[in-house]
Length: 265
Picture (cartoon, rainbow, N blue to C red):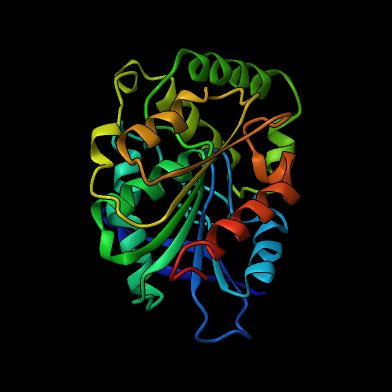
């Protein structure tokens, strides 16, 4: 498991993408791509990708989006726009796959914003996705989300949160303010991707904690509304990060789900 970097052309400039391959000793096995949360990075997944890929016997790719981790930070004065997740799904992820020569359909596992990006990528590029696991995804903006993100802003300004995040991001301000500013931007309040999900036909498991402080269970229930084939898992005593709060249960559930559908890892 070696951290590497690849340069791609995106958003009118060269950006460096931090990434890590898992299971290189399993050539030919299906690939699972991990998409991190709004304040996440490659390293913030900790050992969850390794554990899951080991159980599934598959390969994995974990990367930090531009602005996060050790990838290229946001440019001076750059602000995310309301379509930032669409651009990650439709521009950045395809460019990264091309640069890394990933041609086969891959499974996507996305958390929070990464879950939304995974859904959008599967909807807009169905031929490139073999299956989906999304944890605490956002389909629309809720009052609960906004209030929690406001509280996180105060925590960032008044506690040691910047120092703790610095363990995972070369440029903490790039990571934090890119995410925080757009989610609290009034222009983002009407963001909604529900109607875009209809083209998704691949196997889909949506997981959410009952105690998620950034979204209600309505998020995954709306996935089932638009995609009746979706499987849902609601976890008790679990917040916004199921893979950290209930790692064993999450790994078991993903393994059982994939074992039950054809063509999985």
